[in-house]
Image (cartoon, rainbow, N blue to C red; front, side, top):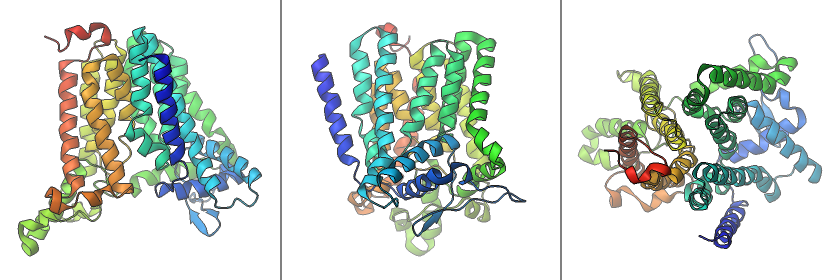
Length: 440
């Protein structure tokens, strides 16, 4: 691909993404409006301040109220957006301009991540072709468009520092890598999923001294980010807000195409057999089944089981990858960790597999044998997010597909996870050694 063709493709992707900015987005966009307004006024008060025991803060905009449970860096970013919008539009009216303002950081983060993938792959491979492929595989990917500007998911704000930190760890810059991973975690807790791959990359580059420097930088950065809340006396309130993540996720699956959704479907079908026969398994799955209800029915608590499975799968993948210092393998480890969390943890939302996409782009750009896996994962993520938000599921009613479409997608996703594991077992190699794929 010539440079001109590459730039035309980037421009076309930009046009598509900009065109989606005025779209309404998913339900949480309403929360971003309230949070940005409240944070613009007093960002350190949004979690609440003080109380014995600490109390949750309630933030209000117009006639809407909610609580806040995202980390501080995200709030700093959206406080800046809120202040700028409030200065341009006194009274903070609910206009299309507000919706676009809330989505612009997603667009800029996507541009930054596209550039990062190009630069990193270009440096590792020494070639333009895989670097261009990586940039376009992310920028034109329907999963990152639907799960980005189109619906207003803010995950890209976390992905950019997370993947930059991983790359810096590979290039033996553990301190700056630790800083960036901390910024990712301070944007969204999902940034923790990069942790195993980051630790392996730091260990491979500099062993224990590098791990110590990266850990110190990580801790110091988080301390600086949370310092204003500590000085305000709002740190206990912030911890209380974070604790709500676990209590809110009293579901097997929050519309994620994973094992929890399969169990959700199977239990509802099983208990419906007495009334409807086997047709009970062909009914649409109406809503997530709560973990507490599963326990009430006499089954083991799936939360600790899911966590143990994720930890075991991640530990195995780290052991497989740690023996060879290779960015493709390290990025694949990050993608596998994300996939393991998505398919085996409870309470997972439909968009949390998005992190796997840019990590697989990075791995597949350097190891073309992983590209089919990237294409399949991208399709799964696009369909899962679209099924929940764009009602594409109406096209795939049980009468057409046999059973609920998202259940079928969950089976495919679990099978893809097994396929991914087999790839890691066989070994991941960089483009320098691709002629040796698959390993003997």
